Image 1 (cartoon, rainbow, N blue to C red):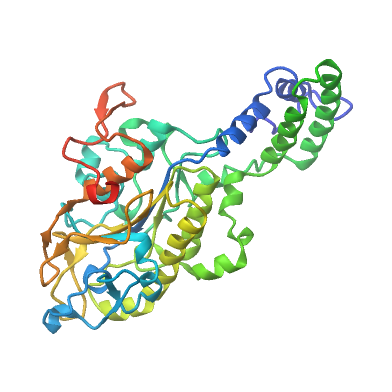
Image 2: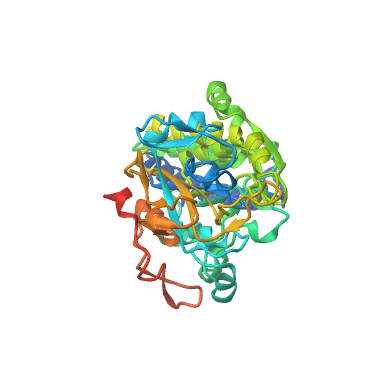
Length: 442
């Protein structure tokens, strides 16, 4: 596509010989772009499996959101009360009233274990610690999906990363590692996304080429009537693709139904602390991207490293989470994506049971909570429990790699299969001990 940038040896219609040959390969011989578009249309008629991962940079306090301990002493219990959800027996924080109305469409895992005390996204995105990733080049799970399944259509990348560049560098997402750079994500925070637009082509050049193709179409019409109507539509769409981008269209939330966008509530694109922004447009964009054909979308959402003023921070920001995550869950099901799009919301660890002297909660790796929805999973349930302080898993500990194994399972990927590294070495996606969560998949 990007070859249409210069004019060499121009003829009377201002189309160069080189350009004529390039267009001719589309119109007369290979029909490359129209054929791609036909393939895209056929693929679009089929549903595809996808996942949206929302990473809570800094680690959200589970004791103040989805696992409150109302019977614990005040120095553990905190300031908030619970409210009942639509599912009898499942209570949530009083600051999450909209989430309470969608708990029948999601499941809470209160006993996620196995993570290390490190401020990074690596464990969530790869299933391994930062040091293990740096040593062994383990890939981002989105890159693994891109390797195993490829794109759903020729014109949409399989993996889009909405992480902004965060000040704390280990919060930022990892790449394809041993799979090779061709499986890296398209990053929304930089030139990757900008390059999806063919920014260096003048509109006049395309107008001339379109006129040329119309003439060639006339020739083809007299030569071969069979199936030409479909090809004409493909040609028309070819020019639409060359002058715009399906990916960029998906990311333009101004095209969304105003009522839907209002339900998400905007938040702010401004970073919080040294983490991500609490910006609900990202959640809406994620849904629009998977509908456009993207398989994996990752979102960095907010900043939750509340060593001080934990409760003030949550009072200010949980209402935005309440609006955004509940709207995304509603959207997934209302738009008929409940069987195909998996959602997981989680951070790198939980927070300490005991409130510190600064009214904060510190890092706590032994246990955290995660929220999952969609993907055809069994919902409306709580999996596992913690002890009376929220400090340790009391029943049904779920290893964090099992969360990733569940995502792979929902996408139709066997985590124990082998893939080839860029050095042509066979490597398993995960070790033998990673298993999908049986309560979610049946």
